[in-house]
Length: 183
Image (cartoon, rainbow, N blue to C red; front, side, top):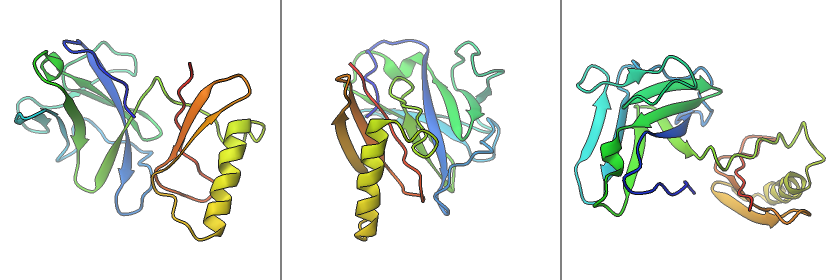
């Protein structure tokens, strides 16, 4: 679940993971701001889509670094398939109950990743993490029973009382994509 954004928010930056539709693999090489066909768009509820397209006006802008100042329609591959997109303030103006922000490129799916909700734990490299252990064991049991784990979600509480939601959106052997929300 994406984090709520306050109406009339300014300088909103969102992050998206790029996935190759044909293979289901994360596009770790990244997608450049000037990749042919790239669109960065937003659609406010019951309104026309507004977008920046390569070769169009406006066009996606290159961000010089991962921590560059916000630039409307800015785009940058920050690493490991994660992309930063800076949206114009008009996307979040008051007067609409919601907005959908999404990049688009033929052959790819972009999944919004909330930077406030990432739990960076490798379930193979860090087998002591109790929550990941529980989910990994549960996921393995489900796979052994022949179940599909697309969009499977667990909500757990660790021994410190932190509530964690872990979602598997696509399964690769020994991989669990996870997000966490802590109090």
